[in-house]
Image: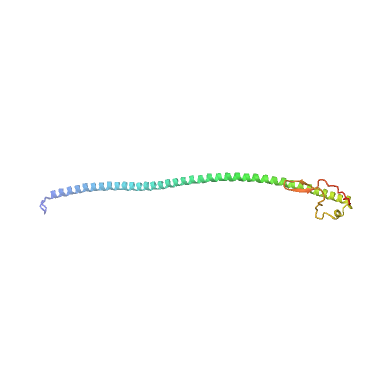
Length: 191
């Protein structure tokens, strides 16, 4: 059998079958290559995705590390401020307790002064009353001896300058001229 092209049909069939075998063989290789390529591309894509994830995690970790370092600095600064505030609180508390002690001491001193002033006022009142009685008794004893003395009446609660007085110190700041003993007034003899 001769083909139109001059090649025997058996050769053409054999050539065709060999072509099919080579084509199937080459297509299997290309399919395997494509399959391997697709597996490698999937692995590559997965590795690339994992690398991107790791890169993002590393960047996030760096940000967290920087934030932690910044927070440590802030904590140290705040702890320094807190220790200063505690020292200031202790000093203010000590000065406040000192002021409270001074206040209580001054209050006690004031109460003592008030009691002392009341006692001195009572004593002064007694002395003034005694002086008034003494002055009144002297005026009643010698009413005619001196006409000027009869006219002197302690209207403003002051005593006559003729009465002998000596200073009586009641406190450190106050000196009162209160008679210690009254002189006996002798009538002047007329020549």
